[in-house]
Length: 286
Ligand SMILES: [Zn+2]
Image: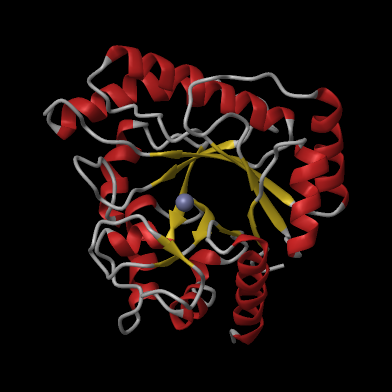
């Protein structure tokens, strides 16, 4: 399938029971989960029975699985305690990712706090994140996927070209990839809705990170205008990006084979509608 379409699903009650149950109700062909409280530092152990079921059922139904690491993680922080917790939290998400058969673990690129220059923060990213990449030695280990932000504050990576220094800091490690969030990249200033805007943005991304690095797309429309630096997701076609841009995205060679995950509002009804619309746009390409 050119682009499996699915969503981020709730997992309270079990990865397989609740998570995959919800995914089936959405008609999801791919699924993203949290393996820890996204707003905390806890590193909970999994439930082996749910892990095994999740893994087996995803495989049987050809559903690719993705983990989103907690939001508090910031490898650019000037606070040592935050950096230490970031390392442990991301290591946990990567280990849990392998245990449940996930293809990738998404982490936000973070920001340079404390008034430190970007180069200092990126040197710290290298020092603390690169060892985690080097720990991914098993063949079935997940990719580590960098998700750029909407460009608030002292963001380390929000425009396509910001991935360059970040990738360089991590030696362009073979286990490194990109998760492109359409809302974030639009908020950061790339006008996906303009003439050929989506295609140009993808061209710029490939120019920066090379072919084959884009592993996942967070397909979210935006409640705010381009360049607003606001991270407020809207339902597909209901925001300032619009469904045409998603159609263009689905026609670009860089997105061939790349799954789309929605992180949109509107509860189950909204999610079902978004996934149906993206599937329709997928069929309409060509
Ligand atoms: Zn996202």
